[in-house]
Image 1 (tube, rainbow, N blue to C red):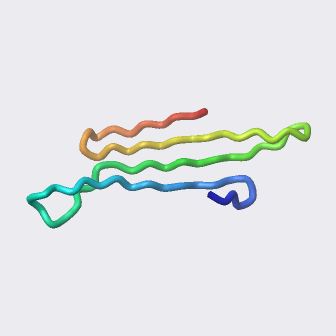
Image 2 (cartoon, rainbow, N blue to C red; image 1 turned 90 degrees about the horizontal axis):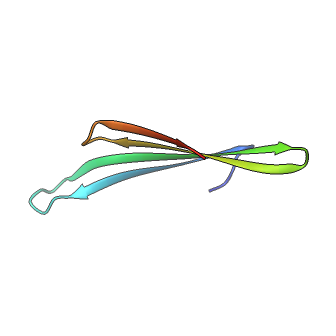
Image 3 (cartoon, rainbow, N blue to C red; image 1 turned 60 degrees about the vertical axis):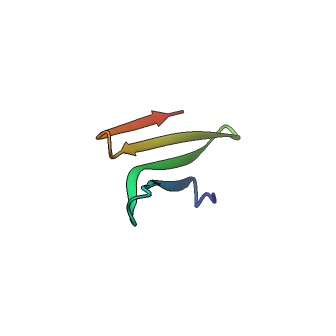
Length: 64
């Protein structure tokens, strides 16, 4: 991942292959954002994770 300015984003899509079907089934997506903060000559990073689980109908957010 390359940070442009102070932010970087990665996206993942997760699929399942059903042997009885030609198509892939979309399961979930995940977005990872990394933020860089510079305070008093120290560089701090924040990581935000966003999960979207299609089959369960839930969305999750995690901050670190």
